[in-house]
Length: 67
Image (cartoon, rainbow, N blue to C red; front, side):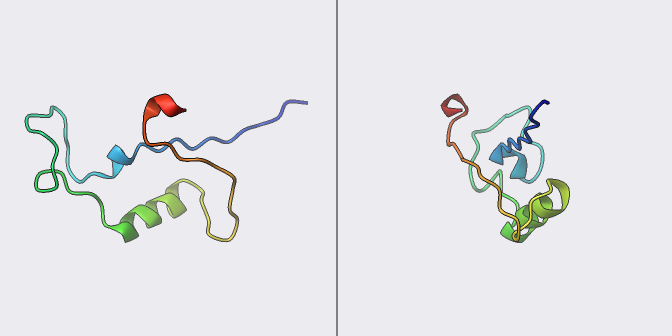
């Protein structure tokens, strides 16, 4: 029997308003604003199958190479 793993890999760059490609300017808080906290939570709960009542084990990393 095969064990099934569910992996959610979320790059927080996804939660930046607007399109940052092609990048013509350096990213900064005046040009690339993050989503509101409530919008991020709603996205994760509604679209990624996460729930507050059923926590799953996980880790987070700052840089991709840490995976």
